[in-house]
Amino acid sequence: ASDLFGRMGRHLVSKSKRLQSVPQISSARRPRGLAWAEDFLYAGTSAFLLLLASLAPSLRFLLLLALVPFLLCTARHPGPARGARLGFLLGLAYFAPSLAHHLFVQPLTASLLLAAGTVALTGFGWAVGKSRRQFGLNPMIVSLLWVAFESLMIEVGITGGFFTSLDLGSGYLYKVTILFGFLIISFLVVLVNAIISVIIDITLSSLRLSTPGYPRSFGFWHTVTADALFGQCHFLIPHERAPPTW
Image (cartoon, rainbow, N blue to C red):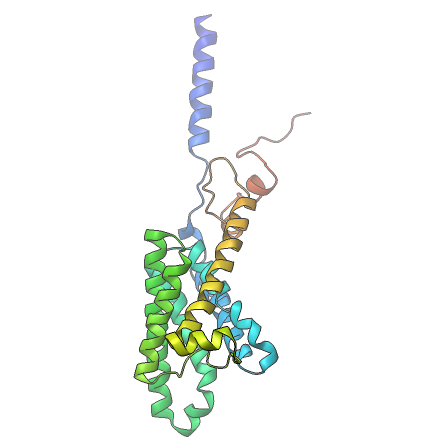
């Protein structure tokens, strides 16, 4: 009997050690360029929507969705460093096409505007990432930060405003603009973007697959790039399963 209990004890200890040795998904194991590519996808999409909305009046509605990809990425990866990188990519992807013609006509001036605009949006991304880590993705804070950085860019002469192409007509929004200034429109537009991103983030979080032993914050890329974890997470294959015996 003592020998039986001894074998059972050794088996439980061995099993416990195997369970503790299950590899944890770590963002450090992802390919180095994958995070940059993912950030460029989100930030570049936001820049593309901002540029597309300025082409025709029928596309102005895209302004209400343009910053959603950028804000979703800051929600998934909070932190000032990641936010600064997203802001850098957003600024580069937006201002480079906007100033492409001027780069050939007035290269020095256009280069300075490109650098200043990119630095400003990098600061905006850093501030959003910092506030996201401390207060969560608060739409009011995001809107106020955008207004602060946009007003700075207008004062410096980097841009005349991101949402000046909106046709306000002569209704309520026009009267609000006369009373508070045009930046109130920027505040409202970014507020709508932030609210939509919060709704999407909450919805995705509720639907995200949760596997025992792995944090809920890890997404699809982690299960693909980590060794032997795609099957464990998506097909519920246990770790270190022995081959079947016949």
